[in-house]
Image (cartoon, rainbow, N blue to C red; front, side):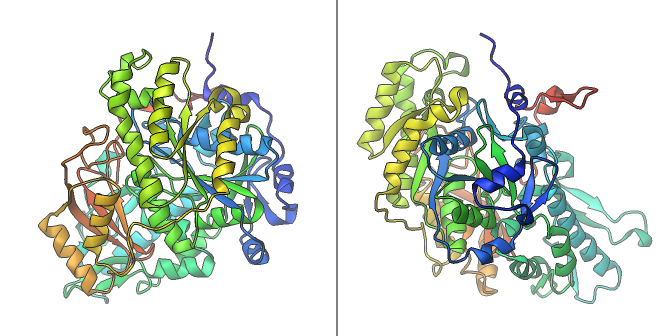
Amino acid sequence: MEIRSDIDIAQSVTPQPIEQIAEKIGLTRDDLELYGNYKAKVHLNLLDRLKDRPDGRLILVTAITPTPAGEGKTTTTVGLGDALQKLGKKTVLALREPSLGPVFGIKGGAAGGGWAQVIPMEDINLHFTGDMHAIGAANNLLAAMLDNHIQQGNALHIDVRRITWKRCVDMNDRQLRQIVNGLGGRLNGVPREDGFDITVASEIMAILCLSRSITDLKEKLASIVVGYTADEQPVTAGQLKAQGAMAALLKDALQPNLVQTLEHTPAFVHGGPFANIAHGCNSIIATRMALKFGDYVVTEAGFGADLGAEKFLDIKCRKAGLRPDAVVIVATVRALKHHGGAAKESLGTENLEALEKGLPNLLGHIENITKTFGLPAVVAINRFPTDTEAELALVRRSCQAYGANVALSEVWGKGGEGGIELAEEVLRLTEQENHFRMTYTDDIPLTEKIRAVAEKVYHADGVDFLPAAAKELQKLEALGFGGLPVCIAKTQYSFSDNPALLGRPAGFRITVKSIRLSAGAGFVVVLTGDIMTMPGLPRVPAAENIDVDENGRISGLF
């Protein structure tokens, strides 16, 4: 049997006009800024109009530690939303936007898969409504104004050796990690070391996702620390008078994007792709808006629960006052066997021994969600045809012993119909009392916040701080930034900071190499292991398989 590609399936479905999708949740044409027939931005003023309307139930979808075998978190999120809609529940999705870098690098696309996708899939995976461009433009405007300030006399006495603000581009490009610019004489600026991050790792992305209004956006932009003077005093974007122009570039991008699933469930797709190097959650505005329009809101956070879910719960919920009602942890039997040491080419063969060895990874994530964060959880097993009944039974028994039921999900092949079992369990969990709590409180030192995440979420024995990182943390405490939460950049492939340690490793420590202040976003970035904020392309980039024909039909996205 021929297996249809994701893009082929997406192109086979006729979307409904976006005005019809908007009507399902009570929006009118006047509430929308149309981007063609099937995409729209939703006006921000709606949140003020609806401030007294009760919020719907919030369901967070996360996953086990990612593997080459794949887990299907976004696919499950979309399928669950469609399943809830099939059960007669007024459902809205709140998803992250794909980034061009991985689309052309490793992934080839990030809009779900099979019969559980958001559409128009090609647009969403490429330029969409221009949010990423706006973020990059605002970021680089600040960089240009910073260097121009230095060129024009440096009235703020910025130490060119202590500039922390980087340029960005929405493409994987290792050549740009470290550069020297301003060469060629006085008219070309002041020579200095510089570098690029990928756009989605920029502080502007986090600010967009964590802002509540244009006014809040401008305040956050003004608070960005771009560097330091010779006497260690921070210099901000506000001192460069950049925040107004940056906000003007971001005005439209701040409005959430409304699209639909293949089954025409409304979906807000807005901001925040990567939780390994950044905040990794969609915007507060999109989530808040979804909660006002839907009785049930299904959202997701990037990568595994140790990254995206931790940041969703410790950063986003802290800043937005959100409280999830249930959590879905996505796993596959294939991925669990990979964690248990099975070779990639043998994952389709029954292997109870490898599965049993790999299960502690899933059980560790269940423990984090139910015990560390105090939330009810269900495990969604993305079912593959090669999964045997014995393997599924082993997963069920193990999860139930940890207090989480298992629901089989077949949304990739069946759409919403394949997610009914999962949806019913989620509905049951949302009626349960939960005891949501965060990993740490605001009032403890930054070092202790890092230790709390490492020990309670990663299951590490402790944390080692390299001297430069320890010194930077002390400086930030002295400057008054100690009350901020921490955003830990860590490999997505392991609980540890070593991507080779699969399953649920023990007896390891986390090494903190460097610290970055994101004062505008309101957190401290903690870089561990060999994590990079500008990825490179693999040996065979996904771009090699992407094409467009003379009729404009795109192929190769998946």
